[in-house]
Length: 224
Image (cartoon, rainbow, N blue to C red):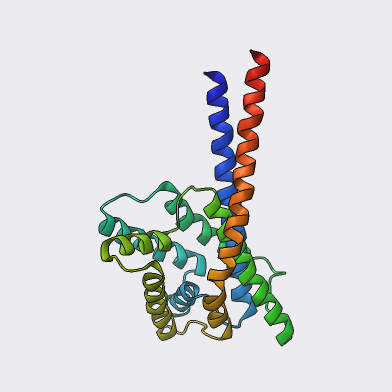
C-alpha cells in the first residue's frame, strides 16, 4: 500500500512537472513572437489590442480572457473545466508577463533578427504545446471552448478553430493589435508543427512515466 502511494505521488509530480514545463516553453515562444514585432498569434493580437486600449498587462488580459472563455465553455458543456484548464489560464498569463520583464528579450534591430526571432518563437510555441498536452493534465481555456463547441454543433474541429481565431483576430485588429506577416505564418504553420511535436513529446512523456512505474515495480519485487 505504501509503495502504491509513493508511486502515485511520483507519477503525479512527474505529470504536473511536464505540464508546467510545457506552459513555460509555450509562454516563452509567445513572448518571442511579441518581441519580434512582426505580428502575433490571433489570440495574442486580441490580448495586445486590449492592452493598448485599456492598459493592465498582456499577461493579465490573457488571464481575464481565459477566465471568460472557461465560463462560456462550462455553460455550453454543462461541466466544470478541469483543474489543468484553470492552471493554464493563470500560469501562461503570469509567465508571459515575467518573460516580458526580461531586458535581454528585446526587439532585434535588423529585419533578419526579427524574422529569426519570429520563426524561433513559432517553433517554441509548437514544442510547448506538444509538451503540455503530452502530460494529459487538461486542455487550455481556448481548446476547452473549441471542444465544447464541437460537441454541441457537431461541426469539424478545424472549422470551429478557424472561426474562433477569425473572430478574435478581427476584434484584435479593431483594437489595434499587431497583425502582420507573423500572424499569417503562425496560422499556416502551427498545426503542422504541433502535428510533429506532439507525437514526439507524447512518446517521451510516456517513456518517462513508464520508467517511473517500472523502477517502482523493481523495488517492490526486491522487497518481496
